[in-house]
Image 1 (cartoon, rainbow, N blue to C red):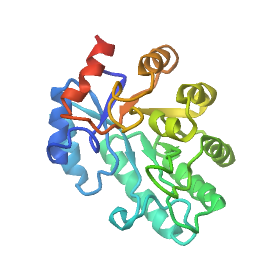
Image 2: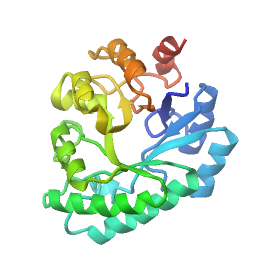
Image 3: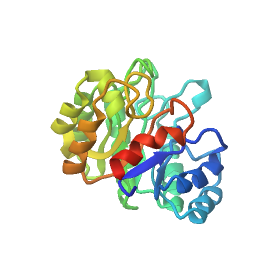
Length: 253
C-alpha cells in the first residue's frame, strides 16, 4: 500500500492514538498521517513509528485552541506571534518524526485577512524550506467547518501564486472539493500542478469510498495513471475501521 497513507486521527479511533500505529501496520500500511500529534511527545510518537516500521508523511500545524473553536491561526491578524510559535513547534515535530509535509489551517476568526494569511505563509514556507518541508494549504467546505477562511480552490490558487515559494503547495481533499464545487475530479485535473498531497473520503457522510455518491472507481483509476504522490485516507469509517478498508483491498489487489 505504498501509495496510501492512513490518517490516524480519523481511522482506528476504536483504540487510543498511540495504539493506532500498530493497527495501521496490522492492516498492511507503510505510511501514516495525522492531524495533530502535539498531545504526545516526539519520543512517544517516534517510538510507535519505529516499532511498527511506519513513515509519517503529513501532520498539521498546531491550530490554536481547538476545544474553544480555533481552526488555525494563519489568517488572524491578532495572533501573528502565536502563529509563528506554532510554526516553530510544527517544524520541531516534523524534524523529530521525519515528516516532510505540514498542512497549515487558515482559521475561522471574523477578523481573518488574506494579506495576513499570505504573509504568514511566506514566513512559514521560508522557515520550512530550510528543513526540506513542504507547506500545504487546503480549501475546507463551509458545511463541515462554518466560516473557514479558505473555502474555495480558486482562492487557494491565488494565495499560492501570491506566496510564490516552491515548497508552498495545495492539499487536495476530494471530499471537501466535492462539497464546495462538485465534480471534484475535474477540479483536480485543472489544479494538479499545484497539488502536493491528496486526501479522500466519500460524499455525503465523509465515510470510506463506496459509501456515498462519488465515483471513486473513476477517481482512483485517474490518480493511478496521472498522480505519483500519496493518497491519504482521511475519512470517518462508517462501521469498524478494519471493515472500512475492504474497498482498498479491492483496488490494490
